[in-house]
Image 1 (cartoon, helix red, strand yellow):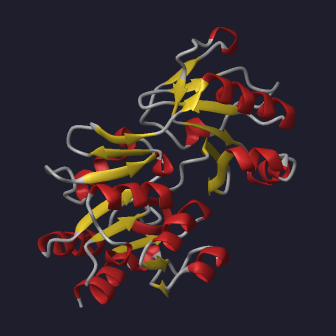
Image 2 (cartoon, rainbow, N blue to C red):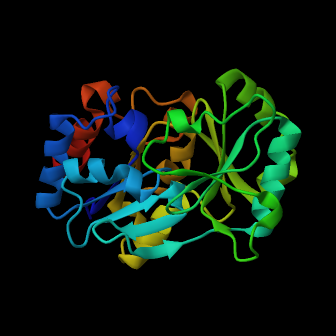
Length: 270
């Protein structure tokens, strides 16, 4: 049947250590597009934060799509128009914020355009500004959140060791009600239960009338696991976590050795 859609994670996958797309990866993506294969960036970031990557990969044309917020949002990349969106309610936002206070870690709320800063624990300002420089940060008063509040995700961004200690203390029932996963060593993401990259990819496949066997997904981290397990061909980077490698069908080269280009050429175009 052949692969008709390639879903690509960014950090540790498409991007090298300089957070750039190598010429080898860029050319391989163009070869895939020229062969009629859809290439979809699948990331935890908002669309605004990946426009420069989409531009570098020639993925801002009519018909190009992106999966953002770890599957919570599917958008036409050129216009930003949503094909599908799942958000968190005021009640859910406040529940997770209370959890962050119990765990003594900083929390941020994020929608399509803004990172919100509620009160942080004493002396523990979020580290998220060191990661995210493409969305504005804005203070928010949790006591006066409107009932119409809709956030795409909440995050805990803090030093890896202390964050891991806090994660171990999250009660099991939160995992029953939310999708909770690390996307970087110092970044925990909390999303609606109906959201992960695999579910986002499944929604997109339905929209495009694609069979799962026609989809390849490539990633390296915990938040890529769902799409790697969902796709007909799940590919782990050489630099992927052991857990991701365990569930992948194939392992490609590392992100510094243009592993995306290698996978496209070997498993899609060859």
